[in-house]
Image 1: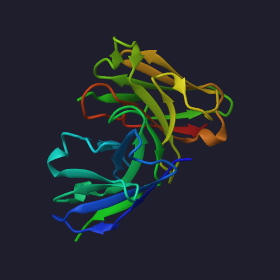
Image 2 (image 1 turned 90 degrees about the vertical axis):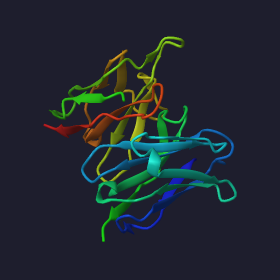
Image 3 (image 1 turned 30 degrees about the horizontal axis):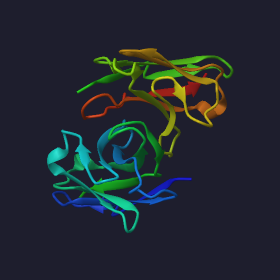
Length: 120
Length: 114
């Protein structure tokens, strides 16, 4: 059974870089599929941030592309998100998930999510 | 960007009755070469991550009760719950995964018990 778990600071200061990691168990991320990040501001809807393939190729939401970097760490079976120049608008629950069809395909399963607040 | 618009924003249905949620895309998500609609449906219960229900617009995931069904093609899609159960209270989202980024979600439909 594939499981994903997000981790990282819950509080980030404005203008700093938001960094999160998603640990995957039950499946080797280097074996296949795509691995994505989706966020949800409090009380709002879902926004796809970007995805990374099992080989390390990436695809990002154009609205965030200039600030987003994703990477794989196959030795730890995890992947990461960095979002630079954070603002209050980046406050959200951040989910990691597996995409079974290309960078933006249907996502299953999802991690439980982690709330990141951008505030001084 | 492909804009996904769901209707209604909220819906109250009696237990055992049918619930219907609509999703409209600003452009077709039907890929002619394979005749597949690049659309998924999710259910999100309070305090939980979204759970995948359906992909390819009508393919139900393993373990999802058969009271859930997806239909539609091109730009207009529907999620139907044939007989509402108490555990179906949630927010439902559609998502398109057609073509180039960004891959977008609808704004969500909140389903409650009447």
